Amino acid sequence: MAKARIAANIDELSEALSSQDVELAILINGKLKTRLKAKGLEDLLSLLASESSPDSLVRVKFTGPGGEYRVYAYKGVIVGVVGETSEGRILGSKALKVLEDLGEVGVVDVWETPLSSLPEEVQRALGAAKPREARPPPPEGWVGLELAGYRVLGLHSDKGAFSYIMLAEAPWGERVALKIPRIKPGDARAVLEVYRLVSEAQVLARLSNADRRIITHNLEALGYPRDLAGLLEERASNILRVYTIHVPRRSYESVEEYTYNPPFIAMELAEGDLESLEASEPRDDLVVSVARQVGGALALAHSFGLAHFDLKPANVLYRRVRGAPLLKLADFTGYNRVDGRFLVDLFTPEYSDPLLVASRGRAGSLSSDVFNLAALLYRVARGSPCYCIWVLNMMMLSALARRPPPRQALDALRRSNPRAAAYISRVEAAVSALRREASGAGGVVDRVRQYYEQCIVSETAPIREPLRTALRRALTLNTRARPRDAIDYYARNLMSL
Image (cartoon, rainbow, N blue to C red; front, side):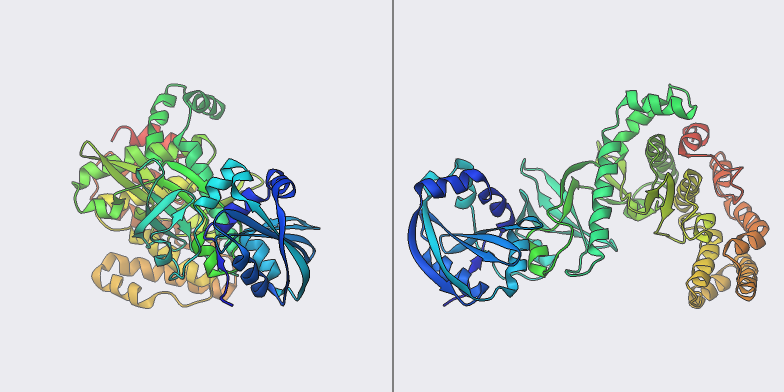
């Protein structure tokens, strides 16, 4: 007998079929069709599918691992599995996973119920049921599927280390982006990636729909003037908008489950990121846009007590509105908040605060986020990241991870820039002392603080005022001299650019 076909949307169908109204319809209008005995799960599913018909739903009920199970078939396709176990109800793919080791099933009754006697919403769902087909693994396997109402058109970007961005058509006809986390079925870390996805969606939704009254209340509580509220409310348009959060489960046991029903957030579609925009926009204009739009968006986040900690070109997206780029801050996934403290677990050496790196992410603060923003502004103003920051962070990260530093990249920088050569030597000496003394990475910062500050002054010298002063104010390692948050930085430095 051929292997039974499983409905592509078996999880949603199982949810619909688990209602008491369906069971009541079977009890009132169903009739015993036949009796069957199966040698295992595959045999049971195949036999049940062969008993189904175009105008009726068939169901079998039996005792399995930890409880009672009901399996449904329609038009030769298994459309639902419902398990009532001691640990609660399980549905669809999860129930099938539990039943994989099912042994012989004794004689059970197959009940047939006319489709017309079922609730209308169940009839519609069954009418759209289609069997799963063999598909390539993601991301190619998603193309052509309809995921929770969104029809996947193709891969939009796979540059993200933790997710894919798929191009999709929304139920209302607009083209949108689906952000789907990269998950290896069976990997326990999948739960973390799903958590990141949900956390990011919640932050984006909260900020992109920020209300002026709440912003005003937050500003007053922080000691800032009320008249900033209107400016920050406008910056909500610089936060990537979220349409849907779809999280059907927290973990996946098979590639098939992940292909047919992945977690995702549906977001507005961007044309590209900041790096791609640099090639087409005048540098001075782009610096002002980043300062006002991204700086304002970060200030809005800080007014809610939220942070980013991973500002870089790939996380600043854009789309054009009447020909001008509207920047969009995205990807709020680089930290957790525990007991009121920011714990950062993602570092980009070119842009991260060295004080944060030295603390292994335990000393996250809003001033570190301001440093991150200033490092991004330096990149836009000069066309490349600041080597003063990159060298210090890379050397500390290498020392903390007990691995050699990137010699090839450091040697190339030495050859191309005599000023960088002297600075690299100072940082290397500090790291060598760190290894000899077995002290924390904070010792490296203390030893090179003077040389780092001199490096920043030298490398920002070609930048015109008032941006030069703004960058030096934020890129210092003296936290008392830094802006306390992006609200302060935006109001005192960035708005006037």
